[in-house]
Image (cartoon, rainbow, N blue to C red; front, side, top):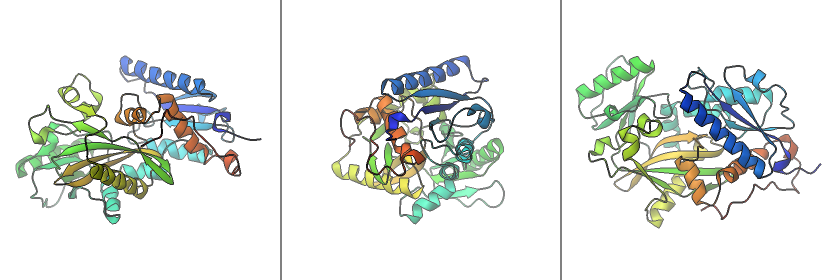
Length: 351
């Protein structure tokens, strides 16, 4: 049989915690339904599977790894923090082909010190840092600094108080992080400068989507110009309201080239797959990679989705692109060199 991406039934796998506020549950269900409808309209046979506990095998019962491809939209196993890698590992054990990064890359991405070490090996600038486990001598004299949990994503633990200016503030913040999150604190040189979100798509030959800038101009204090947890997830917060997304970013051709090259090197260095978003800051003409986010949020209001839209992809078309990238790993396509896999096209080529 000759296959095309649309021939493989798609399973949208998403997580839902019934303890969430009702409005959050409704939002998730709406997003999933919209994506399902978009993929159906593009010709992908699509259904959804909701993961509400740690029983992924039961949730996927009736789905055939040889016939289905999984659109992995799970951030974690409900009730188990930092478990996106666990979802991927279980899908791998069950034999499913799925979109996004594999379990090892996802697990690695949570270890921020290890990621920074890997970036430096590839000569990718990243802020000077130190890991402090909560005991022993704290030898740090670079201020301002930012203190964050060493093994978190989604800006967990980052508030306006995360940036410290004195040793007493540093000691207080480190103690708060280690006690609250039960993990070491990561102390970094605070890069007070422009911040960019760079989305990379593909495998092998990579594409960089239009680059976004987080506009902090409404915030007067330089050390308060940071993406906190509230700025990402709490629309009623002042942080959320004062930071604007500028897309495309106003940068020179040389800066654009630097950002693209740096992002591609970092993407490959951390074994990202299909897509990722990189958070990068600029100081004195140097770009520093703050974080690498494999399987970054694909919700329509995120920088990644908006960048894809600017490149000509509707939300459904971008989902189709990711499915097509993953489909190249599906056994049904291994031997089909004469029938290349093509996603539903965007309105225009990716920049």
